[in-house]
Image 1 (tube, rainbow over the protein chains, first blue to last red):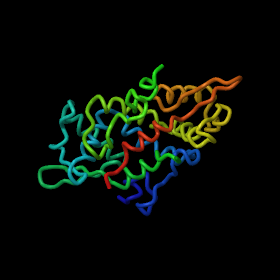
Image 2: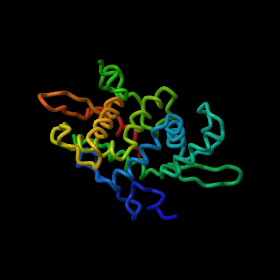
Image 3: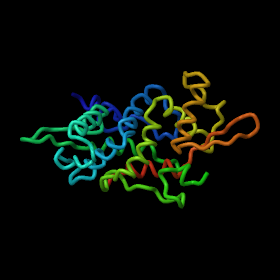
Image 4: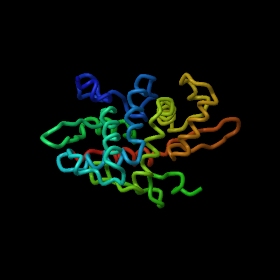
Length: 119
Length: 119
C-alpha cells in the first residue's frame, strides 16, 4: 500500500499536505472529501480517546493492551482502531502476540495546518 | 447564551482552550465528548466546504449569499450551517435581509492546538 493510500491528507510524495488552511480559501469538492474523512474519524468520543491514547503514548506508538481503558469492550476497541486506520490516522504492525498502533506525525501536522489561523 | 455554551472547546472564560494537545496525554471522557462534537461537525464534505468558505471570506465573515456555491440546495446549505452553529464553530447575526455567519478565531485556534505536534 502506498503512502498516498495510507495518508489521504498528504500528497503522493508523502510529505506535502494536500490542502491549504481552512482560513486561506474555500476547499474544493475533492479536497473536502479527503479531509472530511479524517475529521469524521475523530468525531466519535471513543475514537478520539483511543487516538489521543496512541498519540500521547511513549514514541507515538501503543499496543492494544496499553489503550483499552476507555470503558468499552475489546471488540469495540478493535472496531474503532480499524476505523482510525481506514481514515489514515493510524498505522499498525503485529509484533509477536500484540498489534502495535502508531500515529503518523505528518498526518497530525497536516490536520493541524488545516486549522492554523491566518493571524 | 454564554460563551461557554457557544464555544464548547473553550473554558468558561472564553479564552483558554478546554483540552491539551492530543499528543500530550489521553483525553478523558468529558474532554472527548466536547471535542468530538466539533470534529464530527467538520466530518462532512459539504459542511467542511461551507466552513472553509466562511473562514476564508474577508474578515472571517460571510453572508449566505456569498457561500452557497457548494452544489447543494439552499435548504441543505441552511441545515449544514445550523449544524456548524450547534457545534460552536460558527456564530450568526441577521443584518437587514441577510444572515451573516462568522468563524470564531479562538475556536479554530483551540482545534489547531489539539492537533499541534509535540515536535
